[in-house]
Image (cartoon, rainbow, N blue to C red; front, side):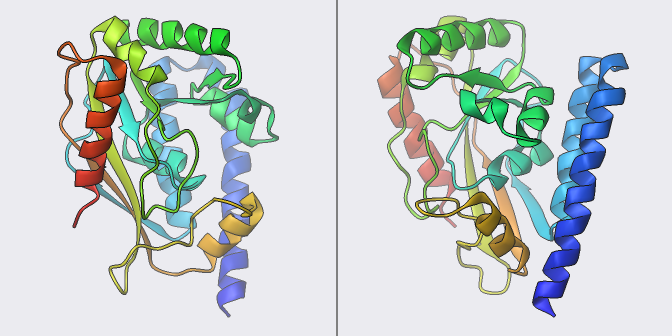
Length: 245
């Protein structure tokens, strides 16, 4: 019965994804940026409902930019969860742009793509991010650089923190957690690490009832003369603190 429910949720989610692709193809060109952002947020909220994930938002999401959201990274589901809590433009590895379906959705939501192996491209993205922040946008990064199990944080890489320093813009720590509703303990179901496949992680999420996605926003902070490494370290400490009960 659990697998049957999961199959129904999967099919509903797939239909919702294709509805999103239709909207991108036929509606987005005529819409303003604000309308597109609002639709991405609504679309993400609906996908969580269809897939049985409850969203809980703690703290205060940014009302507007400029601000760089700095979050820990656990799962493919993180992006949906953060969009559902508050639309933002993510910085992501470039190969995501070429993934079937996901690449189209990511591009339409305003993702900034980066070639992680290229130092020159990283600098291009930092300049692009700084310009976007100067224009008042809400950006988001996962400075761990990869997903973790959600139990322990990986070290925060500092390179992209140069963007808010150059733009003199604030950064806001964001802690992501997945909680089992029944036990109140961390749920590993949505994890996407090691040998996990995307399909396997999605199926595990759909077959696990009572997953709660908790997004905790800390207070925005200015660079205040800190270099990027010091600031990245301080933000990691803030994210760790936000993850505490």
